[in-house]
Image (cartoon, rainbow, N blue to C red; front, side):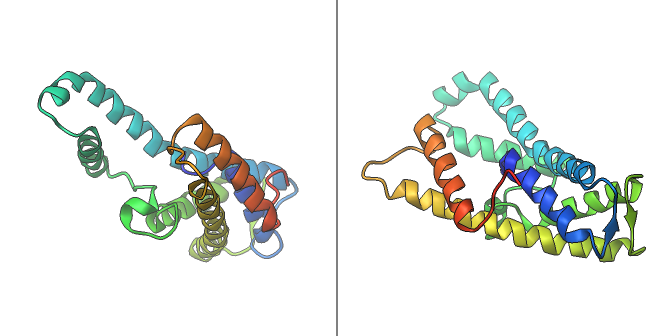
Length: 196
């Protein structure tokens, strides 16, 4: 998943906290935050499932690709792009679409629509603003602020890993451990505690 589950939970709690006084009323903000996290997680999982499907397809043709000297990365990209266009999936990775953020602007906008739809159906809260687009724009603004902060943290953590004396390949166990540690340190520098 493009965002750590801990960050999705933090993002959801922050959204509820920022929306509480003026946009929504709820006696149970934790439950609303949990529902928002579920919507975001489901949306991010769509592309993960698509990636898994592409890997499964490519594993069936690994011998052919080796014989014909076809690049795995190139075939992965082509098949994924075909499936995305056929299924009308909104690409989650912003870096694939040219956006500066980790998540694409289109995906964040799509998630804001789905969060508003969930909020409108949720019985544990009341929307103060009856115009769903106003609520969506408020959610979009707050999500974008939080995601931009997260993106800075991610970039700083990656830079720390690149500045090591020896090359550490991305995706390796060591890289993942270092990234988690540096990511957590950078979040704390910004005053973001994922536990709260």
